[in-house]
Image (cartoon, rainbow, N blue to C red; front, top):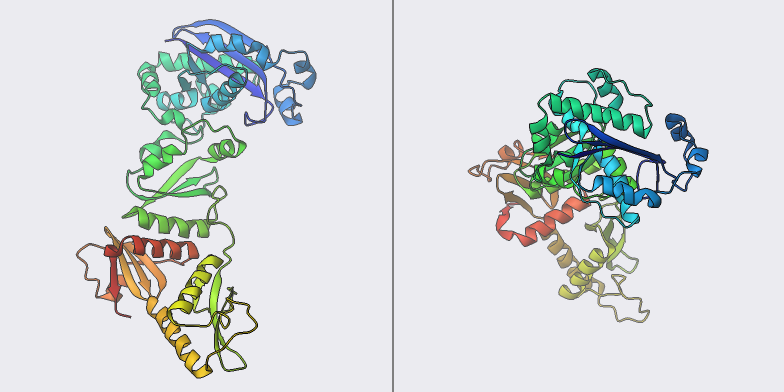
Length: 438
């Protein structure tokens, strides 16, 4: 098997905005090193001081070096027919592939990560970064943090893997169906391997075991792996992948239950990399009051913390939709509901009109029913129009014994996203709704 062991130095952590300052390639035939290639590269952008101090590569050194476009044909020819090997291969591969593509070369070659190889062949080490692993294996790195020295150390690691019966591990990792190559460098494979193929909620944790992302899935394992596929080279994605050190999960009876739990957990944990459901919820409400002429008025206004509307909504348009429905079905006056600004209007008698308002309010109250949503063994309780809690309850359980059922459910705080999900789910699957006596 033919390998190309690659190491690069860069001006930053993601290829969309940063350049390569140095690249080294060690050619290996599976038995020994066949040749090496190393060059500085002009990134045409300043090298940050902390990187210059770490690598020893200065702006002056790269100013006279060739641009990547100049060396791209040679680099492509060295890599195209070999297995691309690197320590944390996704980092090096993303940079090289991106810059080759910008130069007009499309690199399609298998890749191999020596971090993951070493975890399998040399288990039990505390860390597997290049410096730590080299010390554990007795490898001396000459010219640390330079592409040539680090590439030769990585080649020596590959040698030791092969010498320690790592050939089978390599072949397994190169199989198309093997997903471990896709995983972030800091995430041990067992975290993904042990995930269930069931509905539930999963949590990505950082080095300090803080939750940085929460997601829900119909199949937890499949959904988690999907986060790592593709070659998204944006800064946000690269930072996200580098931050993942472990995974936790909670299985759920169904995907619907998982969706509700995901919403609860996002609101509770406020993870760094979740976007949805983290915005401020500006709710709207329909309020009732009596004016100075004795009319019972219905009006839409922003929901305030210490106010109790007769109905609340996540969107203003939803509040308007319901109020217009009440106007049409109960003969309410649009002007008295602030839906029409006409100054000249024929108003009905207050007593007669207020009876219509009372009927509309009674209809709204009737909508605030108590019911279960039964989804497989999952059970969600809505009590008088409000989400109470959910849990896993056997299919043969007697749902008429409400207090007993409540003891089997976990009480969660509700939010408007959950209310909307429950309302939509009940409308789509009415056969899963089990009404209760109010």
